[in-house]
Length: 126
Image (cartoon, rainbow, N blue to C red; front, side, top):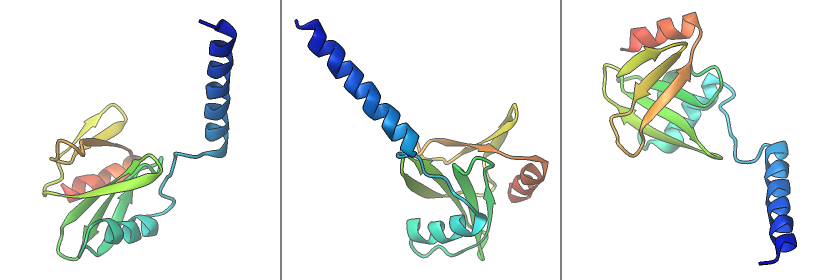
């Protein structure tokens, strides 16, 4: 085994990973509640959100439509994924975060960083 080749390969991989992180690739965050509402319409056919609750870090959102249905949106790398979830919203508090269970094994749970006002809004959705 050529140790110089191995060390060079590892250095190249670390360099590329550093450049990707520096450029912010592979990370996408929701910037506003309006963006979450628009995104929910793209991700879930026939869903037209009217209000939303955005996680403080922009990684997740809950969007409600006129009929009271709720869409759960989460960051999935550079893309977003969304699912309709049943009401009441299956959420529990863990430390300073709220955990919302999608009810879908493959979608999993989503963590929300919420301030006091956001937590109050979440409790009204439950």
